[in-house]
Structure formats: structure tokens, C-alpha cells
Image (tube, rainbow over all chains, first blue to last red):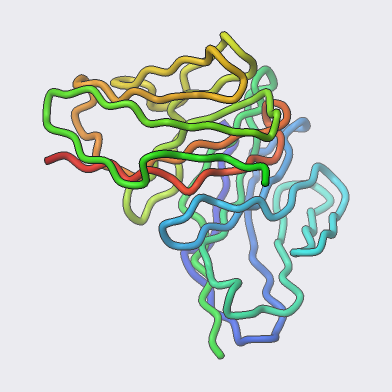
Length: 111
Length: 112
């Protein structure tokens, strides 16, 4: 199973950009890279996903390395509401393309 | 508004009892999932369903059972065989299997 590695925690200042890294050296060619975030006592919220090319949406940008062994979630201007646990996950199993969540990165945003 | 509804929000169970957690979605999604989350940990997949009348075991299916008789509903039963059921249970759905998932607000199960 393809696994991901993320730092346990990161800090950012409000209104500054945040780059959240994720390593996935065993990714397969058909695995998508997904990012979710979770606030305390709530279900995770989908943020963004991609396969090979960089992706942008209203919430964030996803930068994927050329060899696809790592990716970075970019929050362009962090707000206090962005404080959450961010999960980088891969689909695995070509038949099912399931998602396995690891421990994630706890992002703290300082005012 | 479309979304996923999990009920109840909090649930208490006596040891030796089965308990069923409800999950309903009105997003017209084919795929549905159940996850378990322990304090400070990530999510672990219990069961998933790609389509009505079909479901598959995830990573930690022992002690749990599910049914998918309707597209909108995917109830999870925590049986007495699950020795450590206290956890936060999350239900999710996606248009197709493996796509971006929408999550409910979860059910917190505790043992009395």
C-alpha cells in the first residue's frame, strides 16, 4: 500500500502563505493525491486533489513534484480558520482506489 | 441542502450489546464509506460500498457489519465482537469510488 509521510505539526502567521509538505515515495502511476482537513470534532473536509499537474481551486493550490514522490499543499494566505489537521492521502488498489488516512499535519496559525 | 447526516451525534452502549449507527446522504452518490477515528489518530477504513447491494471490507472490518439496501443509506452495526468500540465514527460518500469524499459530522460512541 502506498503510504504518505507528513510532519506532525507546523506553525504559520496569519495572512502569510503556508506550504504543507507530503512525501509519498511509493506512489503508483494511477494513484491520485488527495488533501483533506479536519477541525476538532468534525468530519474531514475535502480540499484538493490531483494526479500529475499542479492544481488550483478557491481553497488552495497543490504542487506535485515531477517524479510524483512528493507534493505540497499551498494555502496562499493563512487565516485563523485554516487551523486544522491536514491529511495527505493516496488512493491505492487499482480495483478500488481507496483512501487511507495517516496522522496528518496539525497546522497552528498565530494571529 | 445536500449532504450527509449521521445520527445520533453521541451514543452509549453497554458491553455485550450491538448498536447501529445511521448514515444518510441525499447527494445521489454511488459510493459510501465508514471510518473509525481514535483520539489523536487518523482515519481507518471499516467498510465501503461502491453501489447498492454491494459492500467490501476495509482495513478494520472485524466486529462490524453493514448493509446497503438503498442508495441513500449505509448503516453500520457495531457488534459485541468489537472489543474496543469506543471511538469517533465517520461516514462519507463520493460520486464514484475513489473520488473526493463528503463527510458527515460523525457519531461518538462510548461504552458504559
